[in-house]
Image 1 (spheres, helix red, strand yellow):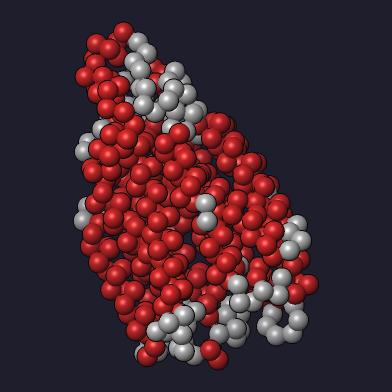
Image 2 (cartoon, one colour):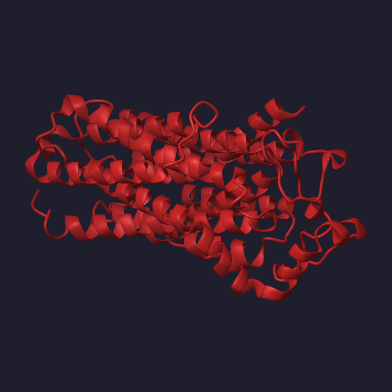
Length: 415
């Protein structure tokens, strides 16, 4: 397409900024807790970041799919700003947690909206969005390392930490403007003359939803036909959508996406447990030493792996995504055993953590590429299918966080 490079850049920016505040919270969770003298409440910071993710994804999936994209992107930008300013000027730990909920909700809502928006473009452009989200991880971890080095170890750094938290989030707010500029001025969806009524764009065969402007605001269960040409060419599909209702349609879409949903959920569960293990795989004496300190360095390695693999779909496509899930499960067990036995030397931990990120990012980008490209998923239902699978990302994160918390407070408590 004529605007492929332009759209690639725009979607890359969209992904980078959408996930950046979320990643900064994850990477700096310890810093945020320490800045309020709540050193034992790091888990609450991470938990707040995903507290409303399932709720906003459900809301977008079942109530907002016919709301115009520009409205949803603007709403998301406002939510993002509320979270950023709120954390920057938080006067208490609990108020900071409330604002972090907004940060996490923005990332989750924006992800579902953007993945649905991608159905209007060639399916290879999922690589632009996913690569952007990977870059957000690298930037977020880099900011955390920079701030950690600036503060240094030891002493009472509460005041410094508060200032660093404040300016980290304030300096991120201008990027929200770039987020909107990217959507409104950089990204150029296919022109009307290139449009057919088949429902989505796929690489090599441009196909876009004709009803994007005319029908976006109609309820999900009433996908009414809007023109004579559409009635003539696809009456059966239109009537089926009319008759089956939202819940039957959702159940049908869930059945055809259940395998992908399961794999994405499992990969996230396994890798979030691994990230938790990174804080305990070596003796305590090896943490909080030097710059970057061990945990921060491993976080950056993980995000680097995610960035590379989320940028890879135009070079390498993986059909058997279950292989990635199995390999990530093996990773999880290795790291869990290492928490207790500490058999992996520090020198190989960065390489192994990059590998964890590579598997997780590859699963994400290949699954959504299939959802956007494969004819298994009907064009009329493609956005709903994408949103259903995206919900399982949050489910995997929540399950991974819960499992990690239980393990570290029971069988691995003393390690």
